[in-house]
Length: 195
Image (cartoon, rainbow, N blue to C red; front, top):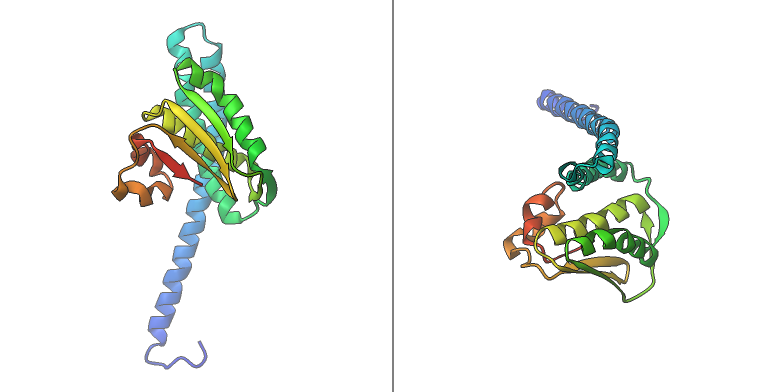
């Protein structure tokens, strides 16, 4: 603290100490979230296997809820990965979107919905393949769950859009859609989201 006037040195020390405590608390919170999300993966996988293998239709119906739990745990891990900024693989969006549409199509047809892939451009981005795949999957699932019967995944320049024929997100809620863990609150309005 060289060059700091003696009168304000205690204040500077107090602010520095507070910032160090905040940093330590933030790091501790990040470690806890990552550990909790990682530990949730095993019981979620067991629940998925049990619900899928069950002969009871009511138990099999839990598969969708188990998938939601799995998605939330993966999103928590994605937040940690984003903070670490290690996601830098080349992702071909058309290929990824086609895989998601193909994986979800049987489930959507079963509930009376359609899914379509529209390719405006062939492009690639850099990121975490699994995280982007989960984003598209989550957007499609939200669209169907909250009113959309016809879902479109559109690959656009440097990104994608997921669109549905649901009632839409109210204007006052649209900014909140991009905040972590608020999608569940606002996604009930359906319509579209961009990533």
